[in-house]
Amino acid sequence: MDQAEIVEVVSKQLGVNYVLAFDGRVLEIFQPSDSTRVHVNSINSVELERHPRRSVYRLKLKIQGIIATHIIEEMHLPKAERFVSAVTEAIQTYDQQAP
Image 1 (cartoon, rainbow, N blue to C red):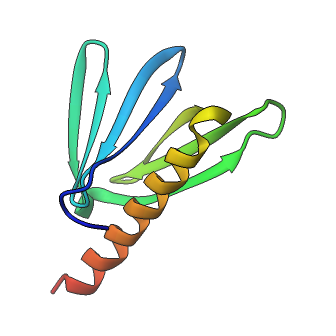
Image 2: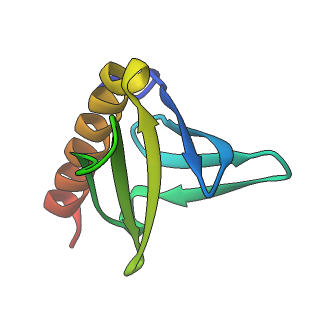
């Protein structure tokens, strides 16, 4: 992923809309009243899976051992797949560069 490219995906968590943005190094989580920035070094994993009982997807972010699950509607699936790919690639790249 090009460092200048920002991948964004819209999600819901507990009925609240979120925007997850990743620029290749920093994940930014925007919610209505706040935002959180997380360096790729703090992200343990990210995965996307189809919900077993609903027609939505679950995006699971594991950050410093804590898992946060975001609900992704089907219309946002292509962006969510790009998001997961970009974050996964950055995690692997950072792990290879770490001392």
